[in-house]
Image (cartoon, rainbow, N blue to C red; front, side, top):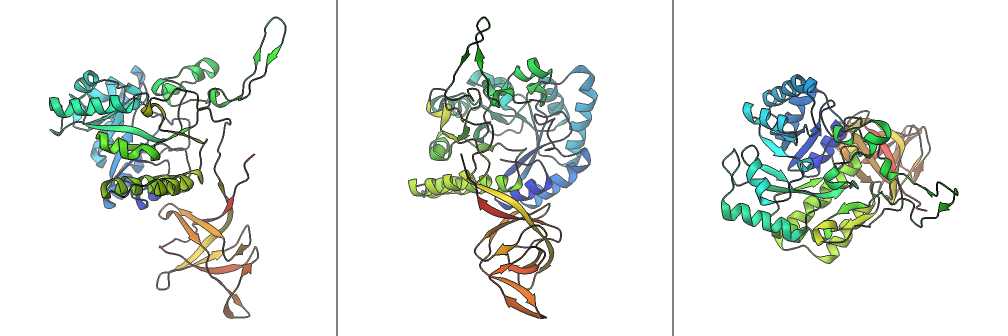
Length: 412
């Protein structure tokens, strides 16, 4: 299950093999402060694009909801049902009960902190999918899934309740994301999707009487590394996990494309008996190329003690993208894109990323480049800023798609 905070990310997720996509609308979701949201008018289009790609569309309405917002919440659920959205992801019982009452399928959010089989039995009256708490061990996850099968715990659809786990992305220092630090500091609640991420900052500990400041080797003591389960994905599959959630509705389309593609390949490898240490190493290298705060491998699932601090507040990606050009034309017959180098020059052998609302995020290695020279199209090794060049691309791109140069990123 891949994240989408824009139509570019949505396209990237679907083109990279996502089986389902989750997204938010307005302020009733856990990314209320971010630009990573759609509008109610987008609901039908999102559902249509997902279904055309054979994927499910899941609406997040996973914040706590106040009385004065009940009408808005109900209207959103009503419109989601009419638009053909496949389920709503929720934690507030008001959302859960209302969506269930109108026939809109429900998935229980990680915010509900489902940690045991009894909680699964309770929520099974309303929901077909349970996102388990991120703090559970693999043995506990396996126990819950075995209990569901043994007790024949079924959701409203009639099928066995399915279990979803958090597989990759940013971790919150709080238990299942239930944090009040932002509320205390800025009167802006994380449980309302408005977290200012105070935990990601550097802090000094000062003696109030003497003014003495303690030196902390790793000053980012509340900024955990991102969870990365690629090394233990085969164990999670073997335990019976049905859905792997990839975090990142606030991330770029190339992040969504890379993470979705890697986990899709890994799940397929598990099915085919081709999950090997060599492939895991290659997948991890790809994951390091996009946004990350370094990785905590396996995390709580392996029963590891907390303390995998990131040592930073922002990304440790090994690659960066720099705006270089835009697509001015696509020649479908030859599979060639015409690029106007509006910001940077381009050389053969470089990597570019083509991004757009329909294209998603398409990475292209520039093996050969052509340019019109004195009225003749010729192969060139390099072209300067301001030139128009022609580059072969493996898939269709669109006019006005943005083109980025992918470069190694220097890490301190």
